[in-house]
Length: 256
Image (cartoon, rainbow, N blue to C red; front, side, top):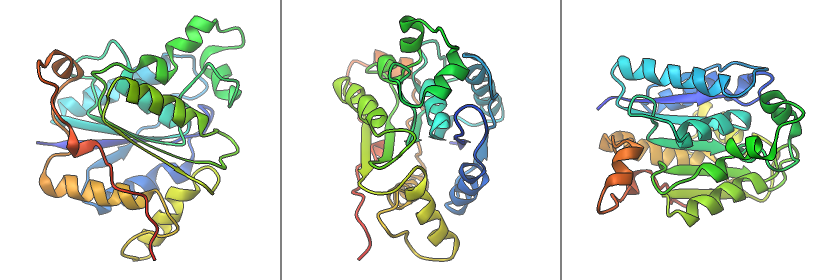
């Protein structure tokens, strides 16, 4: 089975944040995982970014990837969630797991309005805003999610993660949620990446990279980064297939 992780940097749909791009790929590659950055269209109306990402997913499928995961940050997290939850996905455009860091999940709140304006314009209807709000797109057939945030995030409030987590829980979708009490946007993961880059065995300071690193290492060693089932397969199963491989329930404990 061939697996690939697509990294989607944040930047409010206006720029691509460099620290959420190649450094993340380098970290994943260090775990033995095939990964790449996808720089989706900027300053574009929906659905242009999603359509471009789905084209990239199809390209990877054509190259032999049968398990594809998305890792996204902030606005890139919103796009990752759209790819995982879009109602019109098929076998070639589906993803098997999603990792969202401090993601914008709702276009129905007034928080982080710049991204709403770029994607939807000034006069977007309530129906249009809801149509790309991740919590409104969750169904029982959604793939597993790993969500993390910091409570002090000044740009994307943790409300966004809580909203999506509540929707995932309501539909019994396998997921793991972690909200750190301290740290601004991007702080938690980057702290861990810096330590990892400088040769430390495991990230400290309660960083988000620790459980992700540990769980991805386990999944890679076991050779099953995903189930290989499409969302349609899961929805049609008479006995819901357990997905412990991607629930990522390990605790976010700090090093001593």
